[in-house]
Length: 101
Image (cartoon, rainbow, N blue to C red; front, top):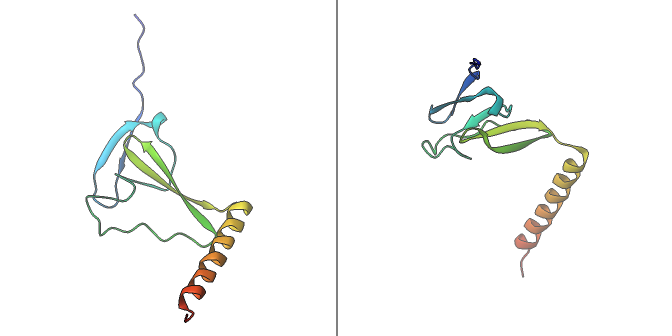
């Protein structure tokens, strides 16, 4: 009879509420941190860490069991161009709503 090696397990925890979940290491997507949902519902006061300038915040659903993984990575050139265009559109919109009729 063949003996099977037990899969290595890791425990991840939500920084917002402290809830933990233990999953197989092979099922975990490497991320900077994990939350029990997109934003911790058990502790709505908790805030995500500030995103460094020039980085994007990527969310990976079910990155560690039911936990959402959060990754900060440098923006690609295309992403940075898109961000710059969005900022220009936002600024133009603010100017339009602040102008008297």
